[in-house]
Length: 137
Image (cartoon, rainbow, N blue to C red; front, side):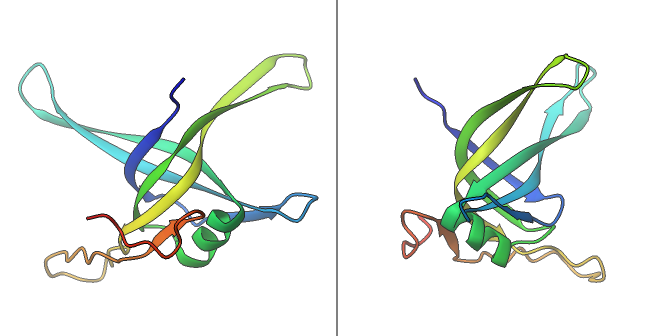
């Protein structure tokens, strides 16, 4: 079975940090991904999708110390489904992304700048397996 997610989007909020009883760090954040498409009448439309993301261990530490709202990232990970039962006995579930690797594409764009947007590419790769590796593009 294949379970792989690749997304490019911007953080819609600052990362939140918490710790397991074992001491392992978990960092949660949300990214927004926009999709442009042409409607049936020929006009361009845009939809935004918000995805909840969790990172663990080294990736979680680096995300929490480096990223904030507005950063554009390339996210590689997998889908996970949490299942639980509510207090009223209803079965609930939620799908989230567990990040294996997060690469920064650009810094947040300042709203105070009236000039042309300059999306400076940053060569910082947040990956628990290949921390010293360069971004492949």
